[in-house]
Image (cartoon, rainbow, N blue to C red; front, top):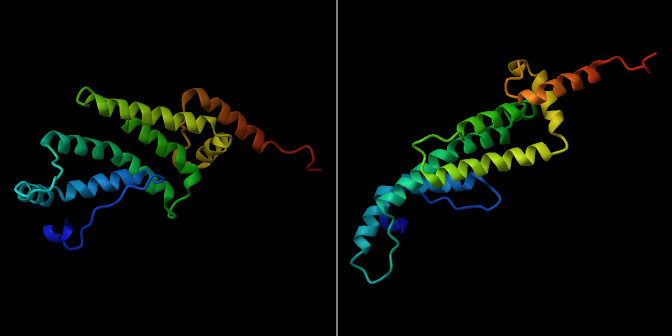
Length: 174
């Protein structure tokens, strides 16, 4: 189909089940090729093959889903990169992600459900993770996050206690 559309240098990205960003990249590439796809679908309506047709409503849904997935893509790129210390940035990045997943009255039902599911999934996995408190300590030691605003209020006292324990002189130091 790409040869017919004459889109040099552009290709559809494929979904990779183990990579959550692949959904964003795939939808984004589809939207970027929206007009050539529409023209190809219109040209193919006269042919005898069954050509999938994407309606205007479906394009809108894809765009809304892409916009919802963008913060997830950004956080994954940040945490997967090698240009920053990711241990101290993990919790603030996930807090930003959680804030971006706040629903509003303009969100359609499928986006509201997706955002709620994503927040619940990420929070559940992280809090159950045995090393989560180490990441809280790393965040608290990073001067960019010293106010601990990115750590839930009910966890801040625990972080301060843990830091105090880690910085107490050892009785074996003599």
